[in-house]
Structure formats: structure tokens, C-alpha cells
Image (cartoon, rainbow, N blue to C red; front, top):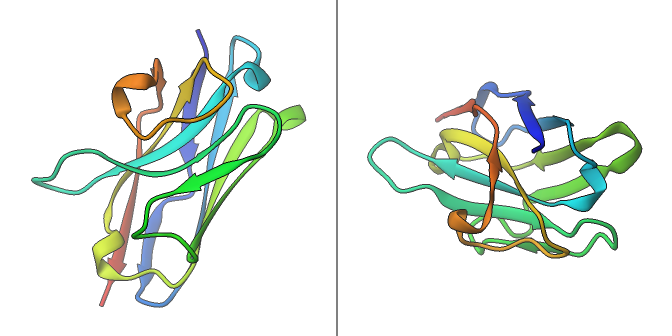
Length: 124
């Protein structure tokens, strides 16, 4: 089982940027499609972005498309989420997740491993 640790969250002003990182250890990182999810207080966890395990195909929710970019560095066992043009609605705990499949999915139940989450707060 892969273990995941997120970092890079924090407080940022609206319009600013942050880059989240998720470091993986354990089983072969390149065997997993990876996803980023987020959960705001009182709301369900929602899909943000996903990337396939090797060919680099990506998927984004409509709410972040054009502002966020997911990428991965397999030799470094790390997946990233570059977040630009942040707004207060992006405030949430962000989680990375691993899916033992070629492609990512949008359903949290498709992922078998999760990080502990990192808080992102966007001030207006």
C-alpha cells in the first residue's frame, strides 16, 4: 500500500497562487493514477483533478479548469497541484489520493490510499 503526505497548504489572498505537493512512499508510485480532492466545512469531499499513472492524461473539475494544473514526477514519487487565481470558494482541506488503475476517477470511493490533508485558506 502506498503512503501519501501532502504539503504546501497555507493562507493566501484572493488572486494568489499555491502549489501543493504529495509525496508517496511504499509501493511503486508509477503504478497508481493520482487524484486531488478537497473538502470544505459542511460539504462533501469533491474531486478537483486527476492524472493517469504514466501517460500523463489529466482531468479537472469544471470549477478549477483553467486555474489549476496537476502534474507528477514519477522518479521523485511526487504529484503536484499548482493553483492559480485562487478565490475564497477554493478554501478547503486538500487531499491527494492514489488509485491502482491507469486512469484517475472522480469518485472518492475509487481510491484506496489517502493522505492526511493540507489546509488551504483563501482570504478575500
